[in-house]
Length: 389
Image (tube, rainbow, N blue to C red; front, side, top):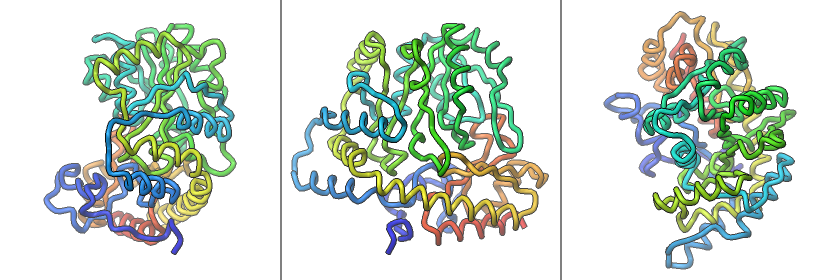
């Protein structure tokens, strides 16, 4: 059977996606609810990765591990080939994930009471992490038009003047937008003008659909490259979130030194024994799997958008340029978010994410994960249609 069509039972595997819906959605029993919410895939990891992990398991000692030079070179070669980005291996620091990496950057390069700027609707840790670290969060809401998003430049610059750090989602989650060269260059120019650092989360950078191009912020930064921190990981690309491995890329040796000191102080500088194995195998041998995945996602997006817009009049979905997430606009249905979620969970028996999770600008939207076998996707669409008709 095709690797992407086989349905794998994930219940009783300690899967957050499949096993934590009761607590996430505040319901007593989620046993009959189909999860299409959190962003991990219901596809197996690339066979070369599982083979490498299986080989590692043959050695029965799981002691302290490190990222080898071959791991760094594999990542550097990958980003050069896929995105035309030159990454010096000296620029790389490794962390347990993009979220803890973001927390380290915020902790080191801002102070309690400093302001961090975000552009909602956006991935919730962009505002929750700074808040939990005692920073003030400033919101410059994106302008939405027909499901597409753009920056409100006047508001953005006004708030930059009060900020120490800007967090960019590149590509954008939840909207699936790819920022243009002009937009990214203007972000760099404004941040330089107001002496603001930039943290660019590029975890979705490999999930780019046919005809589209991801532009790493660092590739456009030029003389301002020392202002940029880029957070990258193979975990979203290859469905390895539970392996927990990511890297921070910063060309500035002083900033790397300060981050290394912070990691040493907090004991966050090492990875688990399986992370380097999966990392190297994914970047060296995962490309054929990824290319096939992108074909599957293209089909899934076309299928889900076509059926949902046709069978639920009023739903509007702009096809994402990246990610495996749909950002569904249900504002024309005249439902509150509570009403929409109640219908989905009780009538449709399907779990999507409420847009308000991504900030006030997300009200009226739902986020749907379509990275699953066709059989699962068809069932999910059936359930959403049932909920709204």
